[in-house]
Image 1 (cartoon, rainbow, N blue to C red):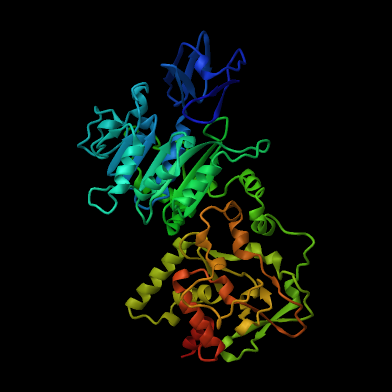
Image 2: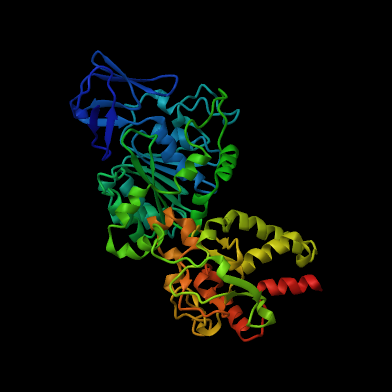
Length: 550
């Protein structure tokens, strides 16, 4: 195919030519014309040969540019927009802003868009045509250009984003500064430095601001090179708390790589929405088209969900770094040499800790050291997403506000089951839960360092600092961990082992503090366990069962 390397983006583009297969630099091609057919496929003519391809190449003033297909712009724009709960203020940096602006303006929440680009005069007018977007009666369909859209209030067009963001960041404490919900960046990341990215970070909303960027070619099995590695390091250094990478094979024949970065860790909850949640939000937030055609041709809920799990090649690159050996060895597969203890070797009966502890787990035979229990059941564990937990908590609050006894309500039983048997985590941003689907859920906390199952940890409820969460328990301090992103379920539900040989008849204990996933409730969790270990407080399940009997 015809291979073109552009000056604007560090990537290769493959073109299929009907009669000849030629390899040449894009800048050497002359007399290239383009058009947009009814299927939004770019039709390119080179000499007497016509190629119906997903891209076209033009040359103007010795500068070559690749105009990408509509897949690319939908991916770049809507991934960042749908990952924000209410994107109102948007900045677009790069070329072909008309194409990206059209996609941004399909979102009904948008109030203001700022554009930073050199010149869009070479782009065909139909590529920035918003006449089909159903906005309101005040906007006449005769006003075709997206740049004239009054809803977006496109206030300015800037050619030097570096200077603008530097000035805006310097006014952060003043009323004249501006904050964006989403910044969409489509420029060569090799031209970026920490100072520019820091200014951009400071211009994003501190609670939920998102930067989405195309970062060039994706690594391949034959080329284990992450071209965006330095860019992601800059993002971490400048304060972005959650960084995600994904590919989009639909965009172009050479895989493109994208990065989505969140200013606030909790905001990544929207990155992990379900396909149904995304479909609902797209239905609620995107404008209809006057032609009754779909507003989005390629982007939807299942597509967004597919981006949540990065391709394996990124993990291969990540795991070449010896500093990542621990998580790479732990979560990238199960070691066949490890002996799994079947659930038939343990039993449930009343805990040896007393009535306040409820039920417990006991060994029916001597259990070997360094062995997991019931690995065969981990894949069936219950999982409560952050948005699901938010619905449960809201319903519980409603029950209380309406004078209904929580213990007598079905929602009260559900909350007690999740809180009493589950383990909370912040891996998905806001609180989520994992609950064992089998009898492992009855394992009690080992007081004062008596845990014999879980992690090798010296932390106990008595020596824990109630004001400081141990670094190893804070999952929010790792903005970019490709292993966790690829093996989220395994990170939640595996990694526990017998810490020593457990004799027949002994109760099996874990250390609940090792599973604490809430930084803001750390002190409360430590004090609750101290009370239970002192025999002065009951566990969640025991409390609920006592209330049910009253």
